[in-house]
Length: 206
Image (cartoon, rainbow, N blue to C red):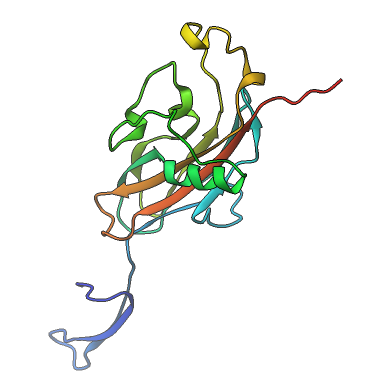
């Protein structure tokens, strides 16, 4: 059987057996599907969609949203998962909050923002997704965790010497573009979604 289009296939085959007058009839059926991955909520409440938004968190807090990466095809898939800082979305979110959209304090890191590992700039570790690679067996699923953990630099030198703690940090929107790819996935069927979250400073009044 060689599938040429998606959907069900059915055919009747006549088999003649030597010594028998009447031929045998075989009913042959198959289902052709498109190999793809899907991200769904861990409680089976449906697909994640194109946007996963965290509630605002205070600097130093963290929250994890659990999901499932589902292989709905008959072949195993080896996947890679990347989460790159989406500065364009961050600018839009900042302007929507009445800000200027200025992200000049965030250093550029080339094509892959997640390659930045400077411990003094935790902005690239604020929104993360893991595991970042693996193999999913046919019609199986694997747990995937989205983590939002806004933090602040502990650097104590130069102009940051008196920066203090999270109470002196400005509120900031974060966004990453999550892409799930696999060698067995047809071009155009890759998974892509945007993950957002907002970090706020403590607001205590006496």
